[in-house]
Image (cartoon, rainbow, N blue to C red; front, side):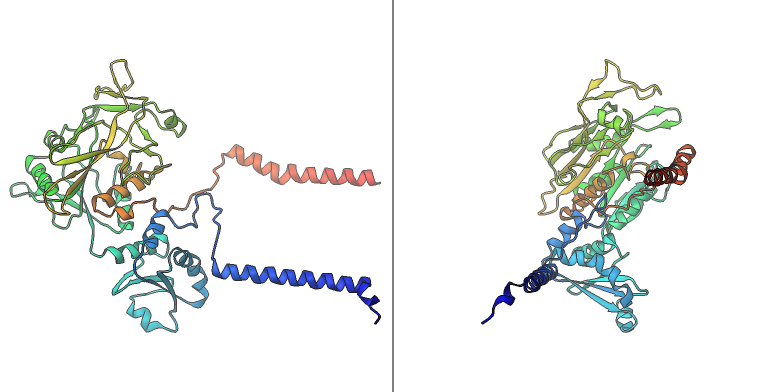
Length: 461
């Protein structure tokens, strides 16, 4: 038998091509099999905008029962929904995603109270929650509401010069209100001073009471109401500024309220903290804004590693346990900090007489009520401006504030870093910089290319 054809070049070429094709097909089949079985993606954005937050991973990853997310849209819009919802399904097999055509299933959309395309509904057993927006905060918020059930309300005390929820100025709490609402709390005002003349009581619907920077003194009935509220198992946050006397700024000592806090083991000092932390100078903060980059061990701050927080115009706290309370320090100023008791001079500077730090800036405590699972909880921070519109968006301030609220409301499982907001990465140029950029791109670089081309042409000639 003539087998010379096997040795010919054409035969070898066909064999090589066949092997190459089989190898490529094998790689494609294996890649498709792995892609279908293991759905992986890589987020290369600077702030990991397309990666689900730690909070979402914690909530979804710890699901004990199936959750169904129904996305209502036209088929042409399913792709946009799939980009987000697939990330949830990849975290836990408990998450089931359904895509509903609003044109083919209008009755189902109406039954789910869906009024327009692009909305989502989360179902957990018999519970059903609408996503307030179709993004991570909206979807995760709906899952949390379905898991927790009931309504949680943050009550901000008003009537003694506190920061207001309806104030959108730099010192207001409108951003605070928006943040807690996105974290599935209601936010409302509790005016205790208006109850003076009768028995003052904290509203019964308040999950957490917030005292945010009062400038006036609390009368004794108000303090007694707060005392009874916490010692009966209530939860409260106290944000207290130094008693400054500068120009028109005058913050009262609030002796009755501070006496109550001291009885619980937290004594706000009558001083102003100045922190010469070198890191503060790098981010453009002066000595009156202590910058915190390290934290103690506590559920509120355990997830704050790598997050800096700033506290403008702060006072120190003295902390101790009492027979009824257990108090923990959350964080302190740096070793380069000082405490001055000169609170009336506009020329604030460090002197040899000032006490050297570090100083405790925030503390969290529990009050033993004697009831099973009925302990009171409180947080004291020697500053209120860190939660105002001017500073809430500074680095980790928003996360810290929400972590505090979650701990106070006994939602420790929700404490983590929240979804990141989109970064504004636009470049701002001065007129001179714009002129240089335009001249370089429109004239200089094209001229270089033309000159280089002429030189090559001349050489070849």
